[in-house]
Length: 203
Image 1 (cartoon, rainbow, N blue to C red):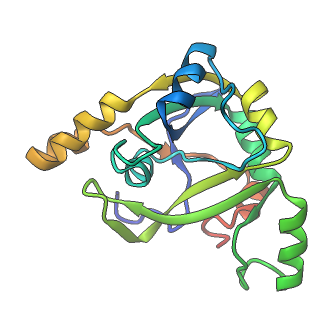
Image 2: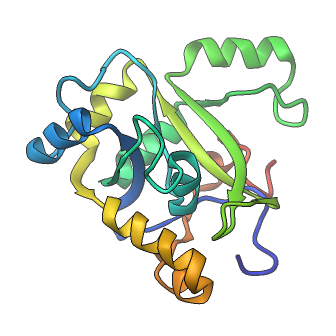
């Protein structure tokens, strides 16, 4: 990660209309989704579902697509409009005295918000946490889930083989592994959204 990278910053693959997020599932959920172009049964619409713009955080969370229940990694392209709707309807998953007026105010916002925001340590190519850089996770629940499934998703791609190939390179040629990573750029956030999610410099 370049020196001077902000502590809390969204970095992602994106274009003018869409942004990439990642999820990992077992084959029984991933395969019907790939055929349908979005999530279908047995995907659970009533459960919170977490999306991640960081490839390396997805690698860490899924163990390079080897952990039980996470053996198929999907690259999901969603509309930027939907992504920003999620951010605008979100609440930090933990109370932050610098960000919230009071713990009671945070709890009230948490109760009303269908989206959770977590900032976790970004990972290195060897899946070691970077203590000075955070990566965003976005948890969708309630009304956000059908919006995600039925409106925001524009395409799904199985990148499990890509995950495995980069993992192999991390053990034989870390430089080549790094070169194969997606080029994730800082995502341009309007000031109000940056404040909403406590992105730097509003953390």
